[in-house]
Length: 112
Image (cartoon, rainbow, N blue to C red):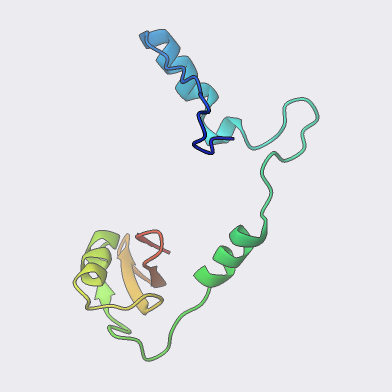
């Protein structure tokens, strides 16, 4: 509870190479999905996660750049940053020689 009223917190940093490797392995998301004591999920989708998943399924018909074809995700992100695409614009991306229909999302700067 850091509310800037004089609270202090300790920060522990693994210094040695073995400690750094151990910390990175223990903190991997794949090791923190299920509770080891009873197998129940540790993190479950809540309001913001559910809303984000829903938002990622949407697309905006008639958006700027709709129907463009890109050779890779980086090209699509560059076009988004250059203003040639809008958020949720339906595009096509070539993956392993096959065209896949996608939507570009500005929120996480990734191609969905």
